[in-house]
Length: 133
Image (cartoon, rainbow, N blue to C red; front, side, top):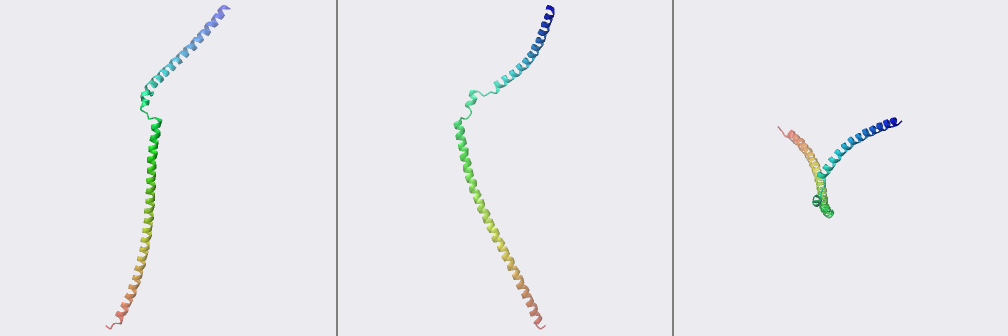
């Protein structure tokens, strides 16, 4: 019986050895990954000296206030330009309407002149026909 028990224990220990060996391989792989992560973090992490170069919250607030002030001035300027553009558009529309009215009046006058010339030409033809030859 002792021999069988010993054989079982040996087989169990061999199986445990294989499991431990597999875990060892995985540990080695994980160790390499962890080593890479640590190296990368060491070279890319921000230091206290790096942080000194960054703006403080107060500086950021003041910067944002300044930008907002500039944007507000730009908005006001744009609003003024829009009003000017609206005034220019209105003036152009009035000028266009006036020009169209003038064109229409001119066309009417030309048509009236054509009628008068036609009447004068008929009268001239009649007057020539009435003259003795």
